[in-house]
Amino acid sequence: MAKLLIIDDERAIRSTLREILEYENYDVEDIDNGIDGLELIKKKKFDLVLCDIKMNKMDGMEVLEQALAYSPDLPFIMISGHGTVETAIEASKKGAFDFISKPPDLNRLLITVRNALDRGTLVTETKVLKRRASKTRDILGSSESIGKIKETIERVAPTDARVLITGANGSGKELVARWLHEKSNRADSPLIEVNCAAIPSELIESELFGHEKGSFTSAVKQRIGKFELANGGTLFLDEIGDMSLSAQAKVLRALQEHKISRVGGEKELEVNVRVLAATNKDLLKEIEDGNFRMDLYHRLNVINIHVPHLTERVEDIPEIAQNFLEEICKDYGMPAKKISDAGMSALQALPWTGNVRELHNMIERLIILSDKSITEHDVAAFANPGGGTNIGAAHSSSATAQVVKPATPNYDNFNNFQDYKDYAEKEFIKFKLEKNNWNVSKTADDIDIQRSHLYSKIEKFGLKRSTE
Image (cartoon, rainbow, N blue to C red):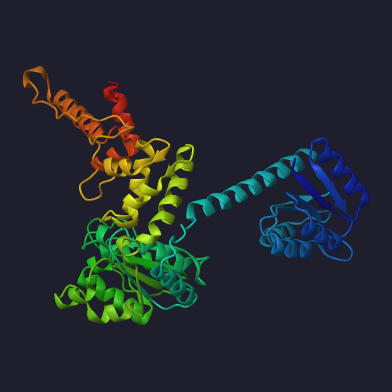
């Protein structure tokens, strides 16, 4: 039941509004002045406030301002017997949801109350969803190297110092960048990420700095670049070692002068951006080979944070694995599984060529394919980082999957090219599913399609897992 507060110095108005709103099953309180109304707002949680504008002791506009300073998302409906367009505009500018003249029209009042409550609910839900979506995973581990990284983040994050994060693929460089932003004074502003390795060299400048309409053949409209989007916040340049030399020169200028120009544009735009960069390459060697600018390297490398390989901190594997185990089981709606001591030791002994990212994928695989307790036999059978998943290995508690390669088809059986394409697609997907023991997530990753798309293909071709 929504809780409403009426602030009005006219007893008749308060009584009328209260009677109407309680009839509609709202929980209503009322008060005759703004000062006491503000105290109630601070002490109790209200979903909506209806407030008179002209009152003794404190003007309704002042109540609105002070209340929203304390509770910014609280919807206010302002009420006045001297309503004018100017008053309504002023109330809206100060943050009121709507303005109603006295005496209030019953239908309009109820519709406005319902709309204000709906908007308040949507604002709250949106904030919750944003928090969930943007929640940054903790940096897991208690090793000395991880302790130093956390300490460095605490020291460096509140400053605007540029940071170069180095380490192997999958080691957690992006996570370090996210925490540097989360703990910075720019945390309320955007963190914009750019994967320099994923953008063709001819498009990287447009991606970073934007372009003007008509600046090149496909520039059919103006585009805002990542530097502008990150203005006031943080720009994370991932895989900076793969950036083209021409783009490096422009990034260097942006760092030196805090100004950029869009591709094809003449106007200089000032930007206030903190730049974090990451790479899995040895940039000093890249400089020797002529692939990276030394002056840019020194601009970026004010603070260096090196993220160690997982094999360099094996003592952290139990904590990380347990966290992934609980997280994935919860996501799948499964009872929590356990890893035996021998199973954990087996995990610690693996080479981890894919680092923490590989460990996450491996724990997911073990959860799906193993019984209630994950043993060292499960690790040996299903978790071979160097050579892929050995699904066909003998396993005491899991069925052995036999993968049979499809035979060469008889081409006379196909009436047209589409029939053959469907046959080939079906056999390919069936082979990959059987190879991965019908792990749909792993198969979708292997053949590089969306999991939902793979499910559609399975349904289209009527593929079913063998029960033999």
